[in-house]
Image (tube, rainbow, N blue to C red; front, side, top):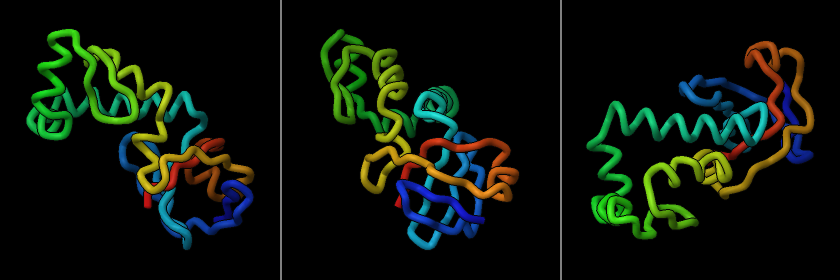
Amino acid sequence: MKIVIDKQGLTAKDISEMGYLPLITTEDGEYYLAQSSKQAGEAARQYWQDMIKFNKKEFVAIIGQETLVSWALGEFAGPGTEQVQSLEEWLNLWLRVPAEQWATYDNAERNVDYISPTLQKKLGFTPKVAYRAN
């Protein structure tokens, strides 16, 4: 199953459904795939909303109590490249910077230049962006 990401031809060896975006394993590494930056941002936002709803302790451990208190006081705080004044603002950041969630390898969004019909059929959509996870 062939895919070309940023002009590099790769072979998808495995596809994992992580619940938010599919993850393919190639000879070069693992990549999350999305139809668009917008879809990737919405998936990242949903990931964090689900963590808040279903695993508050883990969310607090990752974000930190100090950050949460700062947001409650309307102060700038937060993990990531930008500081914001509330949890809602922080959740909305994912709509603009999905690479911070999905591209843990290099924080870069990559273009999908080609996808084989077989891989496209297995995914159920045509990805336009990819994020290297490792």
